[in-house]
Length: 316
Image (tube, rainbow, N blue to C red):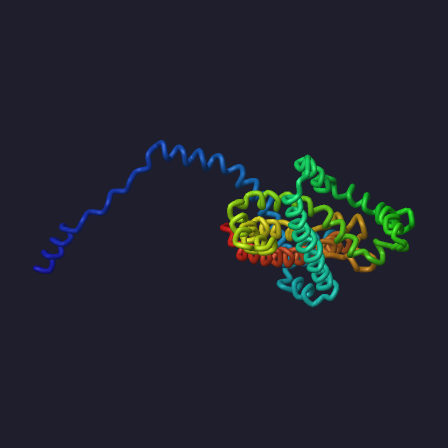
């Protein structure tokens, strides 16, 4: 009985729970307005971004075809598509070729050369620098098919090809660029399309580096290379990795440029993953297999992207 009395005493002495604060009408209306404004965007993203990705994941586990009985009655095949792809020499070769293409055209070509061009433009006195920057952006706005046709003409194998005429001045014979040097040729064209954006992006980042730090480093006796390595580069690290992330994503899925210039040939010399996916899905009617290949490509790009974000220490 005593214990019961004490318990009641303790309960009565215990502090009462704090009353729940009622949301004011103004806050509630603001939240409803925010939800109503965001809902169309969330709905559109769900319909046109997330839904196709989820559907591609679903297709990758089936034997769906473009036409025929399996198009109407697909069967669940588990990991068979992934097992086939990861043991298929043609797919693995296209993956390796895509990796080489990204390394040479996106990382070394666009990023490194873009940074060198940005440094040159930053140090060089050039009247009409803004106009020059706008002019070099032209390759980005030229449609892919137009750029491909222009370069196909310039890389024409005969002596009338523009590039062959240029190297002919130095006594070099005509080269069949799209046959004997097909992969090198599309790497060159991809660098041409992306280097301008890299240069403009890096130049803007370099302009934001405090001049006082650079002058202090010069006063301390640092060379130009040491100033770039220890002052400029750390301060422009995030734009560099952001560009690497963007260019890796776009280059990994590049299709039009390769299709219009070489169609993956000669043989399979320029068959990148995107072209392999197109062939499997639409040329050979294997939608399930093509979807599985696209899922593998998506996972690899995500791994690269997360690695870039980690190195750049970008908050997402």
